[in-house]
Length: 208
Image 1 (cartoon, rainbow, N blue to C red):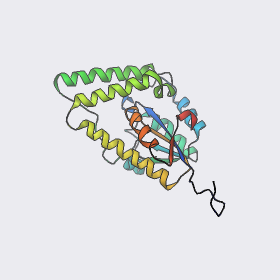
Image 2: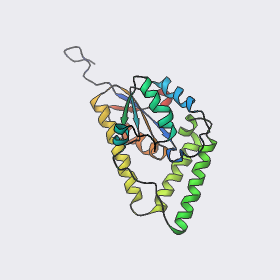
Image 3: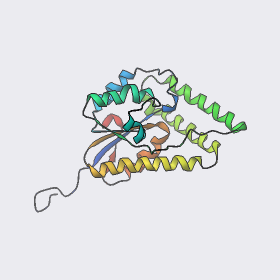
Image 4: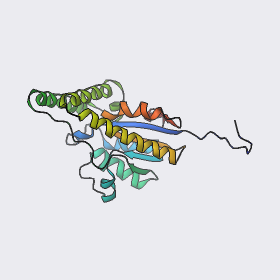
């Protein structure tokens, strides 16, 4: 339906896809070809590429602490295309959860399980669907609970910050296609939260 001026008063929804990685395991050998990840994102050709990196890392072009998915694949791709990189992590994101005693040993075992998931992934796509995606999310949730303290609240605040950054971007520039790349622990939180906005449509990354 159009208004009296013939212009549709309903703004076009922004399409958003969330792609998860196991970024903390960038010291592990990457079992899949990073070129395949580049091809995947290049084929998607999003308008905005939101990455879980801090504004300082982006401004200083300091990618030494970033996983190879970012430093060796996605950022070089963005430089060669029209994709606009948007850092969405807060300036001081939470550290990886730790604990002492039996909780610490349990957490080490769970991280070993996460590392196995990384090594078993034949490509980036399978990390975002099926049992690997769900198990990684469950293991990360259990790690946060075992760490105790306010770890879960810290991660919730971090996720909320990233949600707000993506939502604000979509509000400012509606109708664009945005790919959000974050640690897989955040995917199950970001997708429903972003989809709750009336001007955002969350879609599988393959349908972006």
